[in-house]
Amino acid sequence: MGGLVSCIRSVFRAIGNTCMAIVNGIAGILKAIINGVANVFDIIISCLTCRRTGGAGRRRWVRSRRTHVA
Image 1: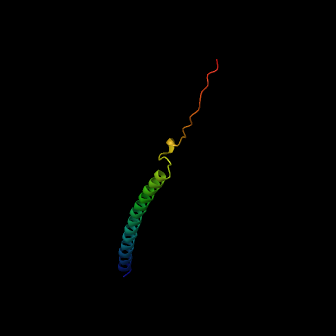
Image 2: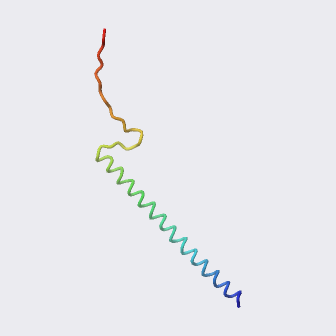
Image 3: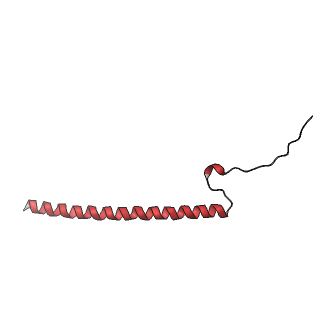
């Protein structure tokens, strides 16, 4: 009788682990989609506020006059 109870517990444990894996997979997919949408909005806002996209390209161009001393 103990073997039958152990087998039933194992079956339910496997079903529970399968359900949890499915939920975790769906949560990971949703998180990736939300992060992608947030990144797209960040790019759009960056362009609308005249902030250059890309970390290395954020330099200001300053024009200076050079005077020649003779």
